[in-house]
Image 1 (cartoon, rainbow, N blue to C red):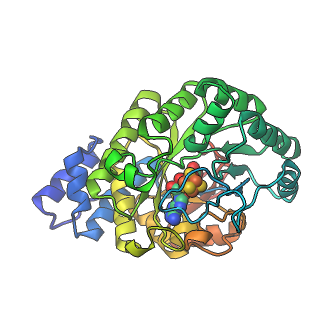
Image 2 (cartoon, rainbow, N blue to C red):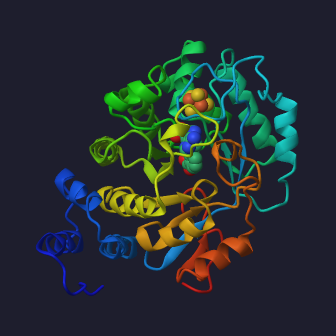
Image 3 (cartoon, rainbow, N blue to C red):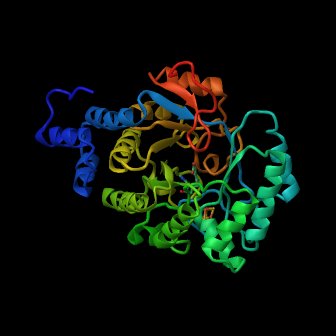
Amino acid sequence: MLKPPQLSTTEAYLWDKVQSGEPLSDEDALSLYNSQNLAFLGALATLLREKLHGKVAYYNRNFHIEPTNICIYECAFCSFARKPGEPGGWEYSPEEIEAIAERYVGTGVTEVHIVGGVHPKRGIEYYADIIRRIKRILPHVHVKAFTAVELKVMCARSRMSYEEGLIALREAGLDSLPGGGAEIFHPDIRNQICATKADASEWLEIHRTAHRLGIPSNATMLYGHIEKYEHRIHHMRLLRELQSETGGFNCFIPLKYRRENNALSHLGEVSIIEDLKNYAVSRLYLHNIPHLKAYWPMIGRVTAQLSLSFGVDDLDGTIDDTTKIYSMAGGEEHPAMTTEELEHLIYSAGYVPLERDSLYRPVRPSPVIA
Ligand code: V47
Ligand code: SF4
């Protein structure tokens, strides 16, 4: 890509740094967050994005199961959780979960994403049973399940180490971990928004253990509430360090704080400009995490489309109306897109759609990029 004309000295320095493949420093990331030049941020993120993935934009065919929204925690940003007996709570039985899986037989889905509340009574054995039941119905589907926050509690309940718990779940059919529960690692913020659940070192240790066992995972960051840029950079620094140790993260997913029906509603929500800026800085700072994902049910279809020009190379996913975490917080009501709609959205943003599996392998040879 040609260096744009009329760059400031700092912008030209950052362009050369990214061009040469040198990692950005924390100061570089802060200066990008403080930049008002959105066009430059898009161009710089695209420089790295296209080095890594050319014009390809990945998507996958997945569905979500949220086994329960009963949760022992009370995160200030959460609109989804309920206490036992509270109206609006649900707990699917293993048979109800099987009935959800049955709906996807023969549909071509490649992944099931399972995340829920941290239930007061359920341990590793319960969740291993759920995975076994799903795999019996959908043997070829990749099971990406349970945040580090859920895993910490289910391991403790079953009196297992993280390693023992993960091995038991892997034997049942667990293939990878989603990136949820990370929120913002810095204790100054974490203590205000989700003080009692797994802290940064526990979240990182569970992912480190998974990577050591050959279980890949994702990472997220919940942004746009009370955190400052410094806290986002600190969060990403810890992820970048773990990635350089293990190489086990597949992708990073910035999650925009949504304000409906939760204790932080008074904060409002950040602008689309802030979303795009955050995608660009994430892409550039996390140079060693291969993929940057936009989760469209949370940010909407238009921002998802724009995000492709700010470093994003992956749109999640067909989803199929099965997630409530975001609709309860103000995201899309019935999130579902057909593969045709997703491909059209990607083409019309100037990129080439490629259906991937959960390990980013093409599901079928693409006539466009072959
Ligand atoms: O950890 C909860 C977030 C996460 C709100 O790995 C909220 O592919 C915004 O893990 N506003 C769970 N965000 C979701 C998750 C996930 C999602 C998409 C892809 C992947 C992946 C993982 O949802 C929680 C929390 O950070 N969340 N409430 C809210 N009001
Ligand atoms: Fe529970 Fe997760 Fe909601 Fe926190 S974000 S209250 S851990 S469901």
